[in-house]
Image 1 (cartoon, one colour):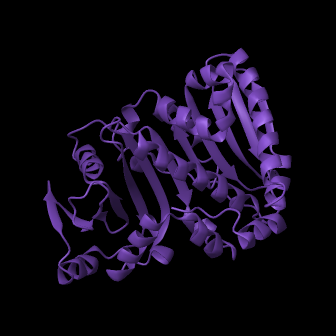
Image 2 (image 1 turned 135 degrees about the horizontal axis):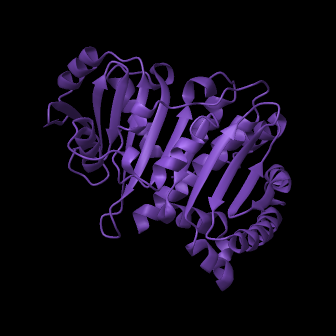
Length: 331
C-alpha cells in the first residue's frame, strides 16, 4: 500500500500542477487524441491511464521552469539516462502515455509507459552496448536497464520501432510485450476502463482515467478531511471511476469528474469537497496567497451521478506560483 499511495500522490500532484499550467495558455490549444492502436498496447490490468501532448506544452516559455518543479527525481534521472544514450527527451518525445498496475499490498504498484516521437534505435542501442548497460532479451525485444535491472524500482527501456519507445518496471513492460505479440489481452478488453478512456480521449492536452481502486485513493487525497466524516468516507468508497482532462480554448479549464454510485452520493460529496476546499484555502492563505486565490475560483458541482470539479487560473497567477515554488513536488 505504501508504494501505491506514494505513486498516487505523485499522479495527483502531476495532474494538479500540469493542469494549472495548461490553463494559462493564452491561445487556442487543440486537444490531444491518442490513437487506439497505442492504447491497445497496454495490458488489460492497467488501473490508471494517462496521456500528455508534450509537443504542445513545450511551445510555452513557462513549461521548462514548471517541469523542473514537477518531475520526481526518479523520472529526472531517467531522462538523464536517455540523454546519455543519444535520445533527447525534450525534442524527440512528442507524446507520452502511461499506465499503472496494482500488484496488491505486498508487491505495490508498477508503471509502464509509451513515448511517441522520432528515434534512432540502432544508434541508441550501439550506445547501450558501449556503456555496457544491463540487457535482457524478452521475446525478441532488447530491454535495457536504468539501474541493475533486478531492483524492484528499476526502470527498463526498449524500442518498439523508430517512432515508439516503451519503458517501465520489468513485469509491466514484459506484459506490454505480451500484449503486442498477442499473448495477453490488451486494455481494449477492459470493460470498466476502456469505455471511459474512449470517452475522455481527445478532450484535453492532458487527460486520463482512474478505475475504482485508484479513484478511491485519489479522492482520499483530494479530500483528506473526508475521513473525519464517516458518511463522506463511505461515499468515496463507493466511487466507480474518475476522469480528468485539461484543455485551453475560449473556455479554459481543467476538469475532474468522479462517477459516483448514485445521484445522492454525488450531491453529498460535492458539499464535502466544497468544505474541504474552503479549509485548504484557509491553510494556504498566509504562505501561498496566489494559490489560495486559485482555490477560490475552483467550482464544484454535481450532475446525476457525476461529481465535477472545474479549476481555472490566469497566466500571471501561474507564473507567480512557479516563482514562489508553491507547486514544487518534493520526491
